[in-house]
Length: 146
Image 1 (spheres, rainbow, N blue to C red):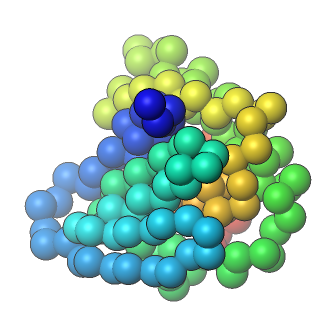
Image 2: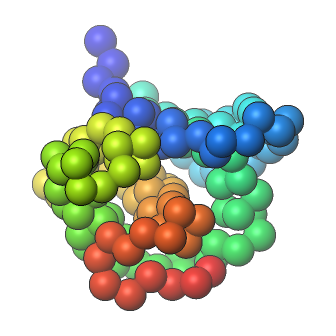
Image 3: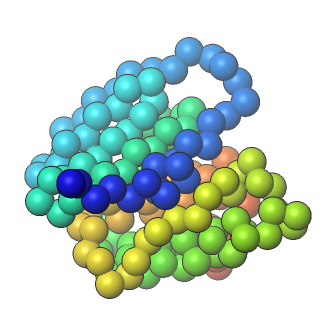
């Protein structure tokens, strides 16, 4: 049975309050399957047995227009930043009285000893930047204004 990172799926189900119509975007990504339906980005790879689904109004548009290109950052940099962001995210999930539980819905099961690959780390990193800039949050250190 395919192992899925369901926590990441739920992390990325933060949906903006507006019910405006959503765009459909499709992008080709080497060695992974990437679909975007109703502003949903799905990355899966059967050989690594993972699946990440990002659902957030505006993320696909932001990713295409404002994110730095793939291979701008090293894999080690992305893994390091993702670990920092996820650690702080999980701290906030455990404190719903202090942090908005509508923003921090569920823990993320991101394990630094698992090699998720460049594409997954790239998308998680960019979602975290998008999230911090869009919702005026600061998870860890400097937040680029991309």
